[in-house]
Amino acid sequence: MFRNRVLPLTVCALVALAAMTGCRSHEPAKVDKKPEKKGPTLPIGTLLYSSQGGLWKLARGSGAEQVLAGPAWFPAINPDVNEAACWVDLGGEMALEIVNLVSRASVRAGQWKSLGSLGRNLNLRNAPAWVPGHDSILFADGRQIWQVDADGGNLQTVYEHPDGGCYSVTVSPAGDRLAFVGVTEKEQNLWTFSLKTRKAQALTDFTLDKGAVGGPAWSPKGDRIAFVLYKAEESNIYMMPADGGTPMMTTKEGRTNSPCWDPTGRKLAVSSGTQNPLLWQVALINPDDSKFLEQLTTAPAGAFAPSIAGAW
Image (cartoon, rainbow, N blue to C red; front, side, top):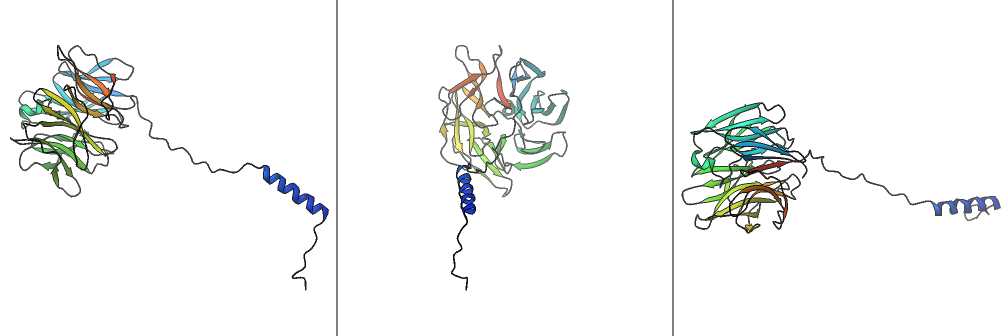
């Protein structure tokens, strides 16, 4: 019998209801704030390079210091900026040396005769590469690609080129693919190798009269590979999609080689040459338009084959 009956509100109830409504109308809207995503904190920028026959280190804001004396080539610094791998020229052989940049203690992973003159050739920049997320190194000895732990142990073959030589290995950020320079008597091109499918394929098809590929570097985002194209007396940086496509010229002055990405993928360290006389120094450039950003070295004897890590 009370189903349709509306009970009147008392005056007190109306006043209370109005007060509550008024308070609600002035309350600020609640917004759920998501925490800002911050990238990993990068250590201070550090550069390794070859100069005066030795291996040198330059930390941002500090002077250059020699790490290894003697003919040391093609260094690769690890992301933690505490270890480096490089080739030491022993004359008839090349040795892979792994150096602790803090203690300066070194380990020799092995030495090979198969590198020959190409192993010393700046047109290849036959640098080793650190494996993402692991304390190990990939390197090419001219015929095979190997992997070794940073303490010099667990040496194993990863890939052997069936028809020619392989040099200048670089690894994708995911660690599942390699890129390297494949060399035969008729060509020197960029190849990739999948660690999952165990298949290799050529990404470029330059004949030697059109150019020779050297010094590839896989971008930190994984989408591009930078490399050098050497033709006659000129060398320029090219870019191409990591899955294949048309190579695009980045630099045009004909005196740039040895690209190495910074960890953010926004800068390239390169060896850049001057004219009259020709002297190589390490500089930072924009990888998209080759705009000069900063010169890093002023070595009287020149600076070659840069490897950088940390914040620049």
